[in-house]
Image (cartoon, one colour):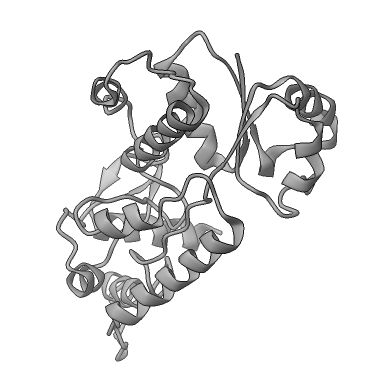
Length: 258
């Protein structure tokens, strides 16, 4: 059974988790932003041979600009196709990943005079704006796997993203759970062979955080505005976990050296 993933790095990490769940599957992951003209014959071969395609509907993204309309007709008639929502969640950083709050803290760390900065956050407006955009996109694209409502229900309780598009393993595990459930219920293909997903989840939770190399800090103003219940005083600049202030000191050091 050949399973092909095509999309951004989110689906790449889901493919890695699927390989842990069932080592008998032949799993190939193509990352849309890394594909090159030289790789095109390999990509086309994998698409023509695959039994299951799990993909982000991509519109002119990456070097080749391959999108679903171009390669779906090349699948076998029997191939199972699952479209997955490309996850985007900016609410942990509603004013940007280098926000006015961070700029104010950087100025304080550098000993500069801190000008008045408007750090107010309209949490209700930001949440409704994101939710409206995601629901509209889901309705237009009709993804087989949608995560918007799950994110809405869980983003306050647990940290689900390291950056606006880099997910925590908890989010990847939920994505995989939904893919496996759809395969079983709609296509009669049970990857788990009647194993409870909780057993698989226990194994997957032991993985290191695959996308945690860069963890943009969530500022106290954001935590308060949204009522986030998890520890927000952590970040990473590619050298292990650190506090918000240590992250910003590394940011200052990198910025001054460029």
